[in-house]
Length: 130
Image (cartoon, rainbow, N blue to C red; front, side, top):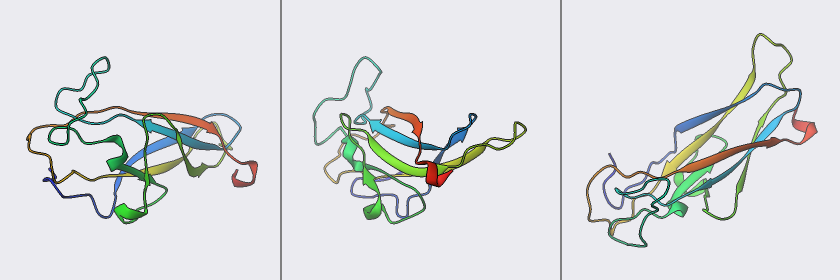
């Protein structure tokens, strides 16, 4: 429900990563631009009036101002140090959140629901964070 020129501030949307094995986890993130015509096989055009570039999406390890988030890329994964500890019981998995925000460029003139795709890849975290 953002208008052109607006952003989520602070960033509050979350995704949760859970550890089911015996190691702690961090997360690598990549993403695609967003538009009203995006599908997995049809990516967005390079248009300032109808596309939200992927680097207008940011990710962080907590609720912070939009400007403090790390911009995502379609080509270079961003490591998010969410430091999920290793699970110590089979009855419950350890988990942690990544926080998301977006800025809609002021040049957007096409109204509608914008869609894109983000990819989250769990990776073994530093053992000191387990």
